[in-house]
Length: 193
Image (cartoon, rainbow, N blue to C red):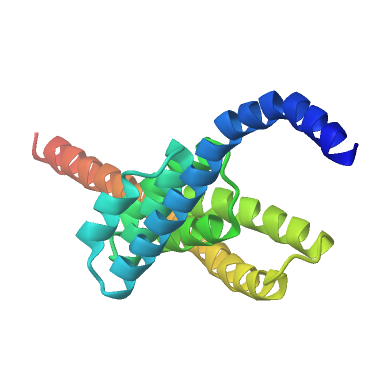
């Protein structure tokens, strides 16, 4: 009797199991494939073979995940401007991974882009606050790193303001000196006539 009821249940459950396998097996397989790709990227970065790492990362999907890993690879390769460009592309697509945000702030600091550094730092601080609220792993480390980068971003912004002020003063002094020279020439010319 139990075998018969089990057979009836199995015949009813089989179509549902087939549908589940058809829809979820590829996702599970993709996850495994993606894990292999991420492992390969990590190995290439550790061996400092950044070309191979970028080539491997180019197979990642979706595009924002690909941009995130490409940004991290480019940063490791010390191509800070390209790393910032990739990181901003990932951020604009909605990626708020804490390592991506930290990488973007650091890359912006290297290329002295105070606007991008300030923007990415704010996103990093927001992400760290979320991590702390959720007691996520590594939140303390990211909080410490965020404080460090925050100080550096503040220094960069203040330096930009000081440079801008110095340039404005220099322009004003140059114009005043030019005006004085022209006035002197005009007066010397008017005396000679």
